Image (cartoon, rainbow, N blue to C red; front, top):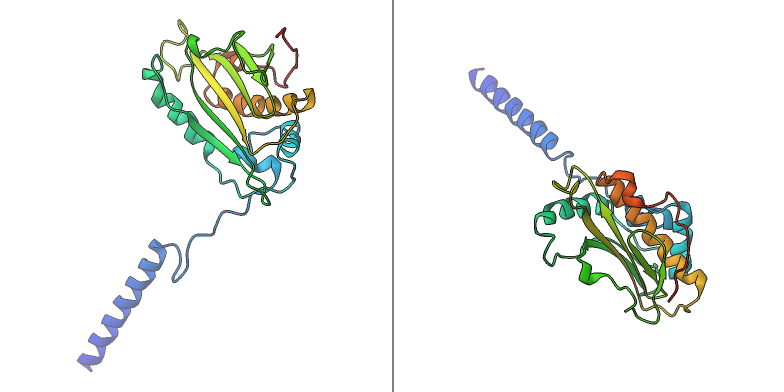
Length: 222
């Protein structure tokens, strides 16, 4: 009888340990639920695209279905910018926020951010396929890339109330055969404006770093 009680006690303890272990790993013999596929345009770039920007991305990549784009790019890239800020007077790394690709081709749109210096501004010295617009400190767009430079005053960047943090958003289009037309230029800049607006809001930049809620396309003399 004593042995039976001991065996029963060991069995109970073993079962209890097994239950605890299962709880620790979230499920016995299972794994965490995978993130649902995020393949629509409005889900790309970590949900930073406005409806107009989502349609613009479809125009740029000529698709309505994309490869899965996981969440986290907005938080990761803004955290990296905050960490980079103390060395922003020098050359800083590009911090990728997203890569959007059609599910049926190797074309790709990338958007990344870093800090700019005055030497990085294009001014009159820009590629023939880049066209200037009156947006932010400087904005240029074309069929292969777009650039948006803004000044940010935010508590996340100590001292920016006296010397604003200079944020540079860049969009690149790889394997593109888009024509250099006004609708294409506005499409690439619409995507970049929307993502940049989400970044400056995440960083707490005063007055959205001077960006309008919707892009206003005023071409500048070339």
